[in-house]
Image (cartoon, rainbow, N blue to C red):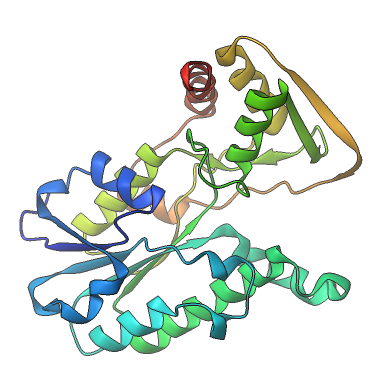
Length: 270
């Protein structure tokens, strides 16, 4: 750990921010603030700024109707040496779908993709080369907060209905990571003062059916159902650039073992 690092973490209440602070080896170097404190900060004190602040409007409205927190922060620090760190999404790579999906141009998924693209372009423009964008795949973590994310849907359905229901083909695979892995990767990138764009992924194709079975195994009961109209949303991100820098690996075995632990947490959750 580089003791010279001084990290400002924006977003006290976000799920990822809370867990990163808890898991990070950089904890002693981190100062947390909420998004409404950004104008009161002396940014010259910090080497890195991580914005984990979450605006729910990013998922369902045009960017002009969001809080535009990234634009505001980047304008405040555009002349500072501080590295701006932004958690983006693997859905950036689905931008072609926006063009194809003209009938559903304004659905939540497309709003989310479009806004992520806009935010990334703003960061690149204002921070030049002094930014670190993390393209993050599906996070596999015990999380019941967000009803719209993959894992929350699975866990809520299993807890309430004793069923995990998919509208995806049984052969669908995803690139799953854990928050512990994300934290380790981010710590390593900060330690080495890396900038640019990184896929923070496992690089492993893990089948959704295998993950669901592992969660049910931990939970102790439940069934898997597949709806009639199924789609395929398989993906895996190239993480060679990340591995070269961090030398970190998340195996498929670890992902499935962690899925069992998530199921056990659900069993004990009231």
